[in-house]
Image 1: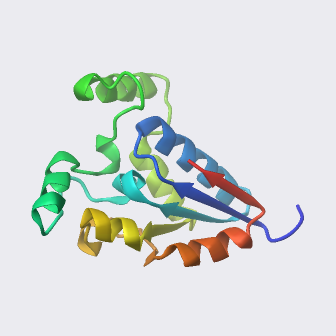
Image 2: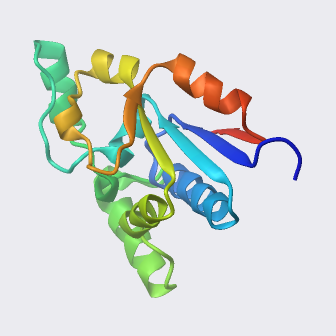
Length: 159
């Protein structure tokens, strides 16, 4: 491989299937020895939020927090959600096929030292506090920090 042996991913979607793809790529890159960074923005932040933690200070922030509980185990698929039933069906199908679950992929990413970065601007807009993020989050940063990481990376992906 040429350049710096780094992989950077922007994770903007909060859909179960897209988050799964992002973590599979990130853990695969990290297992292959690449310095891997994931930058979570907007709905992607749900993958690194603690479950059932209310967020928001103002009226709109509280409404988003009420409707958007967060937590990697609460993500719905991008299609066939059926009001949350799709999530349960996909979890069962994945378990039956012995596919690694999202919480296990998240833990694997942490164990492989994948750098999990949260977007400060998105957190400010959505009124998400640091306390509502999981302990494995490396830092809360602005886009300039991620752009620097991406500029040094051999692989850059946007999911």
